[in-house]
Length: 316
Image 1 (cartoon, rainbow, N blue to C red):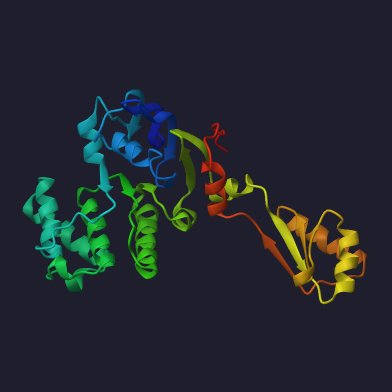
Image 2: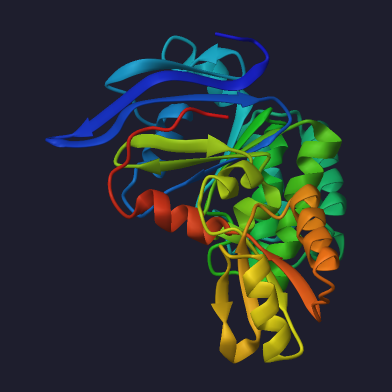
């Protein structure tokens, strides 16, 4: 397995009784990147995280995390990772500083080093003004920030974030996104993200995999996945019916929208395609009031790939 991958898994399988949860999945996740695993409820996302973080064993296959085998070198894996679950694992009766110092003690850090790391993380996560406040008074967003800061006390190389922004308001979600980006860009940490928010994967992930029926049915960048789904088109809107009719004769494959005086022309929306459409309009002495490019979003990708069991699609 390549040392250049923070996570490298081959043929991971897991069943619970007769229910097959993971059916031989493979993963290759580069260092200092964000990888998002999407899938419907029960698809096996959390099971994959549990196997890779050594919480449970696989029935088959092999995996390495931070260069260590998850079975034979489980202790080394645990020392190299952090795990943040769906709910903030903070003690509401302690202060923010005390939570961090408790985590430092659990990592067997010397007292002086523990205090140094706690102070550094409080400052990094903009929690210094609230360091002496009990966590029970914190908002959901502040709890999440502290939870992530506690994960960093052990200076992990890989962090598993299992639906980290569940229940947060939009402002808190964006704040957490910025913190996650900073961990990758400034500290070279690798993030393995599971999420129900497709816009979150779109914003954060360098690569995305869709898990369905226990198998990875598609993998690629956000844009690569969107291009796999039909429905991209260029929409032209005109000022009158005469122009709409004339344009429809030029673009005979277009779909008419008479109510809005618009044409939907199948196309990928690349600059070359848009330029070709405008050239044809100019040649016909027609002028559109507006031109917009419409492409499928990750919602469309997710629905198309998870409506029914799929055959796996090769990674791009």
